[in-house]
Image (cartoon, rainbow, N blue to C red; front, side, top):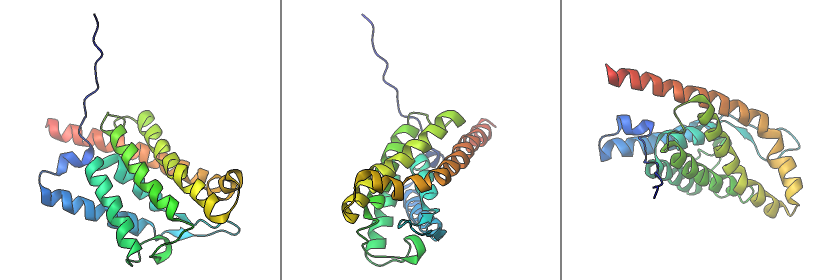
Amino acid sequence: MSTVAVPTSRPVLADVVSKSLLADAILVVGAAAFVGLLAQISFTIHPFVVPFTGQTLGVLLVGSTLGIRRALASMALYVVAGLVGLPWFAGHASGYSSLLFGYLLGFVLSVTLMSWLASKGNDRNVVSALGLFIIGELAIYAIGVPWLAIDLHMSLLKAISIGMTPYLIFDLAKAVVAGTLLPTTWRFVDRSTES
């Protein structure tokens, strides 16, 4: 009778530096602030209603490096603090925007999936890391685009054409950059721990 091997969790990048509750708290707050900072790289192109931002790159990096507890805590902090008035959503915005709220919920789904996949070792080489980042981007759209369709009373196909398609080339570029940097960082960390 054969047994099925269940993959065990591997450390994520933040596990290398975080050895205490205080370090975890600093990582959570720092990650939320990092996403808020990247959200300020923001511009809108007519006729699209969703801004082009750098914040999704931050979300992807948080999801792939912090582990599920810290990543979820940082996204919860980012979303809740922005909703109650901290102006760190795209373009220094804050408060509830029914138009964009689905994308914020997509951030939470994205970091959840990415953290789980990173804990399985999918953050260690360029090919699997690129797949990890593409899955993270698609998770954001999986909630953001249908929410946009409902909010604007339009078909899902129309929402895809204005809330996803124009952004794909930028998202692919973000995935390539992050998908290259993360395994490179792991190689550096692995070498330094061996010494």
